[in-house]
Length: 432
Image (cartoon, rainbow, N blue to C red; front, side):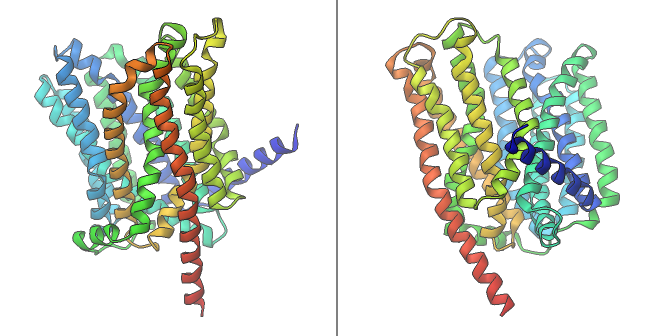
């Protein structure tokens, strides 16, 4: 066993021990993040199939419904964050979970496209309330746990990413097993999962909360008047774009390399296993470096993931398993970069926010990322045909993403240095 392997395993063991020392409410939130993804992926991946086979919906209508779900979630994150700062984490968490229960029940009872559309909007809006509230709670609880020497805040965000990935892996598998039982049964089971979460949160969550009482306009104005955060949100959004574009461009790369997308499912299983195995050791590695170094390595790895495919795209692929090498390397560098950079970047949000209005900051960050994903999808969607055939123009979509990530690789470390200096100066002023 190498020294690096021993260090990684010891770091993972230490972080898992730290998990048991976390307040019960924080552990419940981590568990809830996993269950949220289980319930979500139990139903949502099968929406298109249900609409086409049971509701006879057109492709345009399916696209509209799925787009409305994304907008009602990503587009309204900023509102969920502002409401969290106004009314506190517990209220918004409970309201978000309640709305998601209603949404899944409505989806199970839907017999028309319009009924399902309303249900899907409720499901998305619930996440727009819940997710910023959860992130704000992690930011506050993470700072307290770090001050008490339990766990660093970036490691807590890494644990969150791990639990989310577990849910994203279990949900579709459970959905596939239940698909023969009917779409309505799947929806009602998802609603039942959130019903249990609603009861547990009502009892336990008061142990962790963020200050409430900030007027909505004051919170939003504070965020929009923070130029450092706005620049941070712009360059951070490339990481969100990268993650989402794998769903668009990975199938295209497989089509180019192998002539089919038959390996797509196994590719995502491979990515999930990669995250489950390496998330905590890589987070521990990043924690031992400065935030600037971790961001350089993380976003640099993400840039490399697309650069590799850009180099391979103009040429005929290898035969056999070798044809999958560019796609596999893309997934490895993409997810390794995400595992290193994103927990550190999410920790920086609280620092840039001076630990105030954190709900609004996280909400705005995700809404901004959702807008960036929408714009990038429109741009790259026009170029995706170029990437399907080995030819010089096939590199263009991949190079555009590589260039965007390289800009973030340069800009984000500088922002991290500025934010860290500001926090140090603030701590020193309070101490004096």
